[in-house]
Image (cartoon, rainbow, N blue to C red):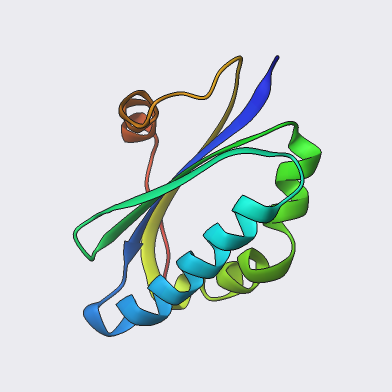
Length: 115
């Protein structure tokens, strides 16, 4: 069964942006875990500066529905205020990757710089 995998890495702009960033991240993860089509939702961090997510979706449509609605949509409106760089990687897979393998793939992706 092919599924859509999404891995993200977000870098918090400053210490003062951490708390609103964490609030948006928490709300977005709660939304993801309750979303139709979700197979797997995981988040972790590297200190307070970098947040990571790994989600798996039944298909692109359910992933896009999540991305474009609710808490996640609100978080995306704030992304350039809260984060100065990020990575997003989307791919198809037959199984949910473990975090170590997903992180290896994400490490090869380019950082996008926000102004």
